Length: 186
Image (cartoon, rainbow, N blue to C red; front, top):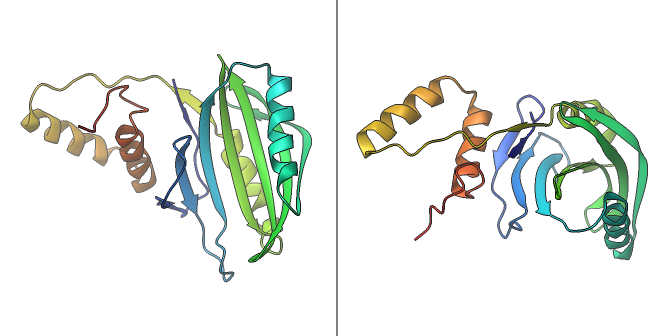
């Protein structure tokens, strides 16, 4: 299964340098601040209980200087109830505020993290929460297409049916082997 969410309207899909492999997609919004608001989705296989995983996440954040992670409750997604947390952090760019949705299913943790400078956060928090609520799964449905001519035709047709953000997200899923389950790198 592939975990998917809808980013806030008009946010751009970006590829950050040195993104950890667990980050599957990142989107940024507009801001007058040097640090643009962002939202990303991560996925990692786990072998511990949800309670132990949440304790580990808190410990990781609390080890960071000037950072506090706090479980704030639950949020309903399209596939079930997820944990919602709040993160406050101070760094050289200023005070940051984040929300983090964590949903664990079949030994996989799906994490959506939305962040902004503290002053911008109240303006976008509802959009970030809506993105978390939109979280759902899609099956790996792509079947091999026999030749390049057919592949080109299929992708052109698929692109017509998608928004630009969906298209960019699909491209990253394919390039990270998440959607097809096959390696695209030689």
